[in-house]
Image (cartoon, rainbow, N blue to C red; front, side):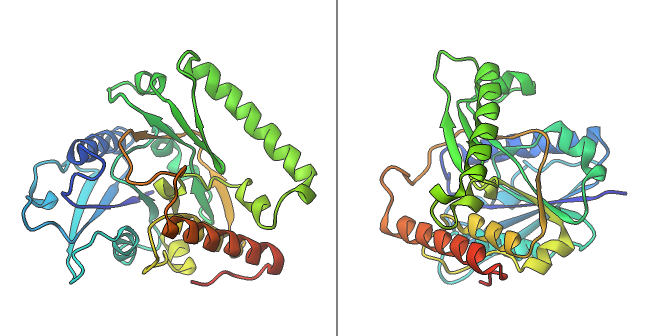
Length: 297
């Protein structure tokens, strides 16, 4: 039987506002789908350095319970007191079974039905990514939530829908544009800077919200970088490492939905650490494109 392990992390620090509500929505939605399609699913949730002055997430009544859903709560504390996303995810990755599908995602992501319906048809030797859409409405209907989508992470770009343009029309138009853009650059690679041809080919934008592969593939790659200047682009650096191993990379058929929240960074006004992490990403892309060798941490 096909089994799924979902890796999440967080703590009760109200990250982005209404964090517990977003986490609860995500758990309930995804748990419902696992039960509907009878996909045995394990949640590995790492509560990393929980604040001493707040209730622990693991002690709250927010964790679904049914025969197809099992929750593993892992509390980790160190002397830093900081929340370190990719250290937390690496901790969970050491716990999964090699033969399970392992999805590393985030606590505010709603998965599409097609993932659970088609999980047993996916290529066991590939990594899977997903387009990410940003919704401002939480409802029982997927279609209702899709109508409120205003942000689209497609390949290497983030697009914003004009308010007067309906989602359905805009999304179809965007998919056509993305194909034309990719074809144009593939026919004219000379106009691209080194490494960018890889960046525009794969779903790099928000790739950290959905990375799916068998457990043995995760362990073959070697997990995420730790002790970086910031969390920015660490997920993309991992994707470059996957590409350097010449592992097949596909996208699932439908996008994931991300519950809107405020971020503590601004791409239009990047910090010094954000700029340095971007340069690390570009250097990694250039290295893989020029040498064809495996990228190491």
